[in-house]
Length: 497
Ligand code: ATP
Image (cartoon, rainbow, N blue to C red; front, side, top):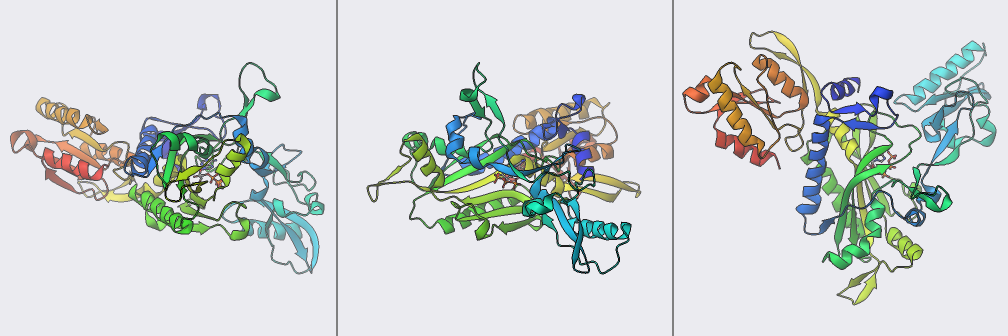
C-alpha cells in the first residue's frame, strides 16, 4: 500500500485534501491524472449501463433532499455504526473493529486484552494474552484466546477490557449507535425545522424520482435507473487510503422488476454483469470473489445480498454490493409521502409496486482496486543489458488517463518534432494523449509506464525519410514494432471504448 500511496501522490493521482493545512481525515483530492482515471471509470460505467442498454435511463438527483426522504428510507433511525469511546485518550473506535478476548488461565478468567481489527487480530490478541500472563507472573495453562468484537461484549465485561490507546481497563465506554449522516441546515434559520442531511447514498434519489421517470421516460418493466454522484458518511474510522472515506462517489442502479418476476434470476444476472464489467475495465478475475450475506444477517426487507469482493493489499474487502431489496423502498416512500409509487402493468391492467435489484459500487474503491491490481515493480534489462527497476501501472486502455504518448526521438531535430506534433494534434481530437520530448527515450518510456499509458509511439528518422511508419511500444510486453498511422487509429478504436 505504501508504494501505491506514494506513486499516487508523486504522479498526481491522489492527494490528501487540504494538505497545506495538515489534511482532513477521510477526505481526498484527485490530481490531474487521478481526475482523468476517475472520469474514465465513470464514463465506461455510464456508457455500459445507460447508453448501451435499452432498459436503463440515467438521472442526476440532488445531494440534499427533503429530510423526510431519510425518515422514510430508515436512515434517520437506523443508519448507524456502533461507536466506542476511550474516555481518557478521546480516541473513537467502531465497536465491530475493536476486538477483545478474555485471558483464561487454568479455566479461570484473569483479565482481558484488546486489539484493533487487522489481518492478524487473532495473533495480536494471543500475543497480548501471553504477555499479560507473563507480566503478572501468573502460573498455569493459558487457553487459546477467543476473539470477539466490542458489539459482543457483555455489559459487565466492558469495564474490564483495556483501551487500545491507554492499555487500561475502565477507559472504554459501552458501544452506542452513532448516526453517520452529515447534518446541515437549509436556509437562514438554524433550528430543528431546517435540519437536512448530505445524502449517505445516491439510491434514494432514484426511488423518489421513480414516478417522474415512469411518467416521462417511456420506460417499461423491467427497467433501471442509474446515477453517479457523491455520497457522504461520517465514518468513525476512515482508513485504508481512499477505501473508506467520508466523502466518496457512488455508481448505483435501481433495476425495477415486476413483483411476479423471477427476482433470483435477475439478481444472478446482475451479479454476473457487474463481475464482467469489472473485468472489462482491467480488474483481474483472480482478485475477485463473492461474499453471500448470511440469511440471518440480512436486513428484513432484503431477500439476498451478494458482495463482489476485491483482494486489496490490506485484505479481501467489499467492492460492489448487489442487493435484492423487494418493494421496500418504494412502499416506504408511498407510505411517508402519501403519493402512490405504482406502475401500471398493461398486460394485467393492474397497478403494481415493482421490486428492485440494486447494484451499488463506489468509484473510489474501483480506483483503488485498479491501482492495486495494476501496480508492479519489475527488473528489466536496458539497451545495454543492464538490469534496472521499472515501476509499471497496468491499467486497461479503457481507463488509462493517457492512451498514447507521442515521442520524437530527438528534440533538436525539427522534422521529427514537427511530425510528432502533427500526429499528437490529430490524436488529441479523439483521445487523451501526451507529448514528451525531454530526456532519453528509455526514461520517457519509464515515465509513461509509471502512469499506466498503454502505448508510446516514437517518431524517428525512418518515419520522415522512408515510409512514414513509426515505432509502437507496448507498455506490458515492452515490445516494439513499426506501424502506420491508420493502424494506430484502428488499434485505439478497438481497445479504447
Ligand atoms: P461497508 O460495509 O464497507 O461500510 P456498505 O455495505 O455500507 O460498505 P453500501 O451502503 O452497500 O456499503 O454502499 C455501496 C458501495 O459504496 C460499497 O460497496 C462501496 O463500494 C461504496 N462505499 C460505501 N461506503 C464507502 C466509503 N466510506 N468510502 C468509499 N466507498 C464507500
